[in-house]
Length: 165
Image 1 (cartoon, rainbow, N blue to C red):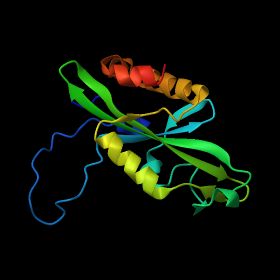
Image 2 (spheres, rainbow, N blue to C red):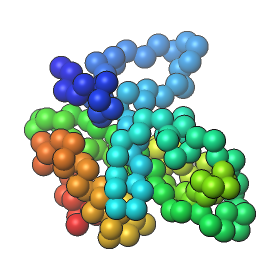
Image 3 (cartoon, one colour):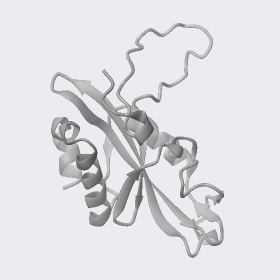
């Protein structure tokens, strides 16, 4: 059952593929249930390009792990959202936030790539990690998740709802 129109940048639902062979590519992860959300101030929106560090805000940026090299950086968050299905229906199963700063004018940015990869993994493992977001960012993410699919929000865990309260 396809719930979202992929042409509109919607979240994806877990694919029906459950068979895994033991040959080549055995350790490959299925990202079909993961979507990326960008939080830019008080706005949150889906940008699937972030899965490959090519979101609209990341394109053309030279990255550093030294915050001092981006003194005029604007804070952004990439939020990894994993969806799943339980007896009640589809829900937001894993939601983890990763920080980055970008100076568009200087085309420089700060992020820790290992943190982004680990947080994506945590999302896929159904963890909720949103405590680092400030109140404005939490409100933007909550609003976007509810507006995107209220049924999924209603089916989601109390931990997610409390984390974004």
